[in-house]
Image 1 (cartoon, one colour):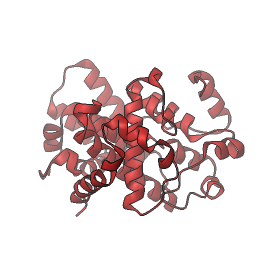
Image 2 (spheres, one colour):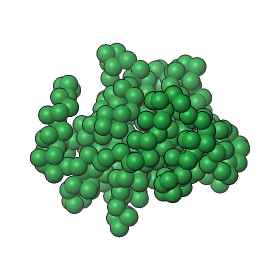
Image 3 (tube, one colour):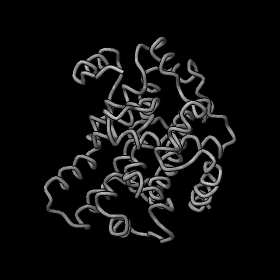
Image 4 (cartoon, one colour):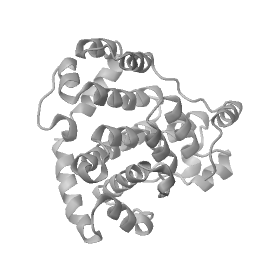
Length: 282
């Protein structure tokens, strides 16, 4: 995949009517606060509390077993204190995207964001369990899980026939880059990468979003491991929902090896992650 000239790519998207979603004020204010280095838990909570939609989704995300770890978090201060300021900021960025790029009147958005949240939670569980091997933290994996297909809802908002043209009614159906390019002259991977860059996500997360349909080479560094965590999370999402994952046969052994697992470990590890995942969905 060729390197993207971001300014030209953004100009081309604007010309075609595709709108890169702006960061909500809460996200911008948190970025500025963290960049200043002069903050405490209450200052962080005060900014987040300005947006009830983000607060609601943040509580939902924080109930994931990888973040709550069996604890009941009932106040925003507790969420910030227990999870940690920087981790909470990652979660805020992730959940803010879902409130920014959506359309409550269209069921396809609900299907998409439900899948994104479940893949993100599975990815966070895998990262938390394999952090000593992969050196990717749960909040980073969760963020990548939410953002990895974020180009899809952006294109759904631009092209009313996007879902129908790509047969995306099925929650386990992922868009084809080749078909997107043919029908719309743009693909969700490039759009998602530009969204991630615009929202100032870490470079390796941006790269993982861009390369998540392939296994990147060493030139993109830590994003290779993050892509593998995402792909294993997607595979487990498919298996939990009893759907085939055609890509897995091609990439499965490489993904498992990167995460430190043998092919014969997959089923047992799926059972372990499923148990943890369902523990947060009582």
